[in-house]
Length: 93
Image (cartoon, rainbow, N blue to C red):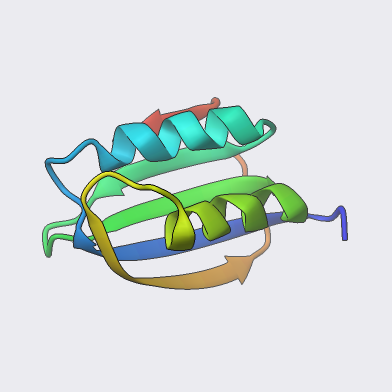
């Protein structure tokens, strides 16, 4: 269960212009060991890519779904995959 994975998440709702990307980055840094980014998409969603140990990625996903996030989350869609690397820490795009 301690395998490294890549988690890609699309978050729907009122998640742009409310500090959601900042909150996601802060949460990822608090969890620790995650690299990737949170970025706005043109359709109003936020895309989150996180790479790290599966347990840590699952914690981030749980916070995105059920945490006290800025704005309002209507839904979350995720895809799991193999890490690709290339990230320096966790950034906002």
